[in-house]
Length: 216
Length: 270
Image (tube, rainbow over all chains, first blue to last red):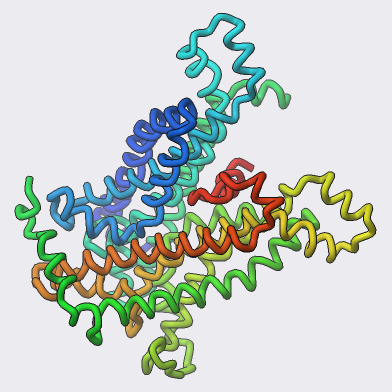
């Protein structure tokens, strides 16, 4: 049986699992970015906060995903099978990865550029949103791509603790001793990762019109 | 909501950890910790043997950068669980080499051990490879020219100039590879006959409400995995400070000691 036949035969479940995987990977990216932006700004604005923030982020990043999936229900009081555990775990990873990237991206804006912005009469807040943040977009985008792609792949680990999503196909294949669901799972997970990756690249491209103007 | 609502009680974790049998027993934490450390060491060392020379070569010649960057990013998209399950199902039955290694590979486990090691090595190669060639590419061209101007051969430039200068980034690649392998080795317990701390986590999931083998065992094993990851990282940071020339680390110290790999992010930009 080829993966396509398997997909047609189990269309309902597979589509549902795909959808679960999409939101379990996407929501943490959005929430993680929203949390990491102010933290990254603090780390770049007040230099003394950089080492502790980056160290804590690094420590969080070292916790294996399976461990977080398992420990979070005890901490949050959620059910072990609840998808929210997965979403929270991936949000933690996203924040851990992005804080450093955002801090470095904001700090990488050259002093001349900042001085020019100030000389044009921009307040520090305007300067942040109109100059620093846009210039940091490619760096932040690169971090987001790493986070998004690894999120999609990490979601499938959650099938080990029973959360139904595309990783469930791996479990089915393993339990039944057939390769077809595993192939289908790999195809769909990798395709999703590439779609996320492409969307973020597109977003960066749209947000940085000046980069195109210079090139052409 | 309190923890009691879901029947998953953290207070039992302390009780579980206080029982020496859970540490020293046949199915105890220490046995699985030892297996976990062995799996990790073997995979990271094999990955280094593959990735370091290749990374130095690519960095030195500048050839194949695009290919390797694409490959490293592409591999990140492959779900590790899927890779483990696929190889266990497809490759393991084809391996007929049955050797037992005391304290590492029990009877009948060799086909699965090899399979899991392949997955772990595949995961560990990209960060080391990417950081090695990025480290070499990042060496100040003036420094490289000076070395050539002094009459060094290509091999000498690699050995005496590029490698020492790239070492902080190489070490950060080895660190992220190690962390990834420690994390993934828990998933590897999905393969039959194999141990590691993931064994406790997965087996406990089946008996989650049992006070002896259920959630407390799961969380305890998880905590030990996290501690192992942190200790491994600290050991590697210490090693890095020992082996990186002070002339180099003076310039790169902050970048080199943070846990999230800078080079990988840079690569994704390319």
